[in-house]
Every structure is written in C-alpha cells, then in structure tokens.
Length: 140
Image (cartoon, rainbow, N blue to C red):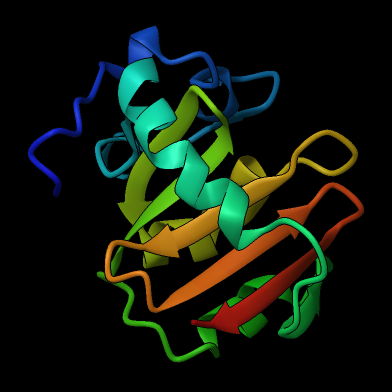
C-alpha cells in the first residue's frame, strides 16, 4: 500500500451501513476486516485516477449486472488475493481484495445510484460499474 494512504475505522466510514446495517446487509466479521476504508483525504488522492479510468467512451468487455455477474467477474482471471481500490466519489473509497469484491459485489455497487471504479494497485486493468447496472472491464 502507498505509504501516503491513510485509513479510517469502518465505524467512521460514510458507507459502512452497506455492510453493517441489517436493513441492507451484514457481512461476517472476517469479511469486514478485509474492507479497509480510506480517509477522505486519501480517497481524494486516488480519485483522479478513478475518474480517468471510467469517463468517456470506454472500450472493453461489457458485463451485465444479473444473476451470473459474480461468476463472470471470477472468470476474468484475476487472482482472488489481488488488492484493489474501490472508489465511489472524490472522498469515498476502500481497499479490499478481488475475492471479497466478487463475492459481495452487490453491496459495493447499488443500481440507480452508484457509479463505481475498481482497479488494482498495479494499474493493469480497470472495472467500471455504471448505475445502469453494467460493468466495463478493460486491460490497460
């Protein structure tokens, strides 16, 4: 992890309700420990990178968000332990693993409200989720 990246406790994260509130979803403690919220300043630091990856016309593999999505994501040949950034906005982001994202993608990507950018620290690919309920995957 970049030494300049600062994290915050899940209890201080604005989207923690997605994984901790019974009205939405309650993830197991061992999974929650693998979702590491970034401080707003650190999220801002990486947000320009997120914006670049998912703006304009993006060419890549289109993946519809439906019952087969988790399996299609797993079939992208990305190692489950790959650390990834997930960014919702200029000041809201987390670090987790590809495996956690694939298994719980519906708690990271809400239809009709979220546009989300997902990418590894290596920068070799990006996955853009659009609130219209589809992903675009592309290698960089």
